[in-house]
Length: 448
Image (cartoon, helix red, strand yellow):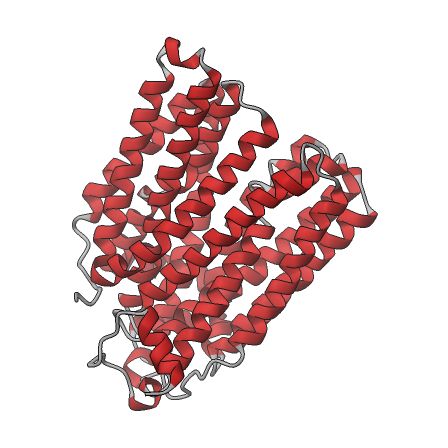
């Protein structure tokens, strides 16, 4: 056994009888380590260009009008999802999907480099507009990576190991988040300058170049596209999507493929764990927690959640990704309900330190559950199909989620104008409905 095989086997719980073509089987260990490294670098890069923390801080330091800060998260999230169905034909035509991923990674590196220069040389409204534009381009690059990565993983890694790779990358990202949170607090103190934040963004640009360098070395089999997968109905939909009626083909897939439609519905209902954390932060700020110190605590809590959840949930996902999604959403909904009840007690709300700790703990637990939901969802969509069908599923589901995210986010934000409790309650109800709906999904993961 080679050193690469020994290292990979030490990190992963492997299945010696996994169903993989011989050519791909011999490269599993090498490809697996490269995927872990690339995914970890990618997740680390995301921490340095976080649209919920780093970029808003940068906007504040540059004197950008507050109204523009509200565009950051929608552009980052929906911008990377909505175009996927339209871009799928380009990906399907690529013989090696890793080349599409590398292109996306380099686009993101250039975009972050533009943000870095803007942080150093610009300010005010002009700086905000440039960064918003760069973020839109960044989201487009991420869109390409999202479509291609699931297919590359499906071609090179057998069922039973894919969730563990996602989990290990998430664990590494947790270390980065903790380090970043501590560095911001210790290095920046109470006065983070644009130049300090530019160093963080510059690091992100370097990380994305490293992602491309690692990914290009993956040995992706050229014969991975089987005839059965290439001629499937969903694949045909993707191939015909290069015609002007690609939107119609997308709607037809959602209408005719019952399993896929069920998955998208469940995924939509499980947004509870992804959309509720910012509202918990809002409750903390309203309770009187200090701005920068409070944010530092939440960044560190997020890192701890990734650190702990990545390894645990990776193996859980390989056993039953659908159960992981449901359990994560159920626990997150329960935590939200408990947080609302605790925050409603007048005796506690007057004790700022205690209630701030409660909010940080709630944020940590919800983020931990979101780690599980995310790892489970990524593993499920890779395991539920093969070949071009998988590419189409990933693209169409993400495009649908881009639109759904805007709708659900808009509803929850509108409810928050009345009171944050209403927004959290709405998301908790959604999550509980998603738990019952998700129970009817078939279990597509390889049980061990």
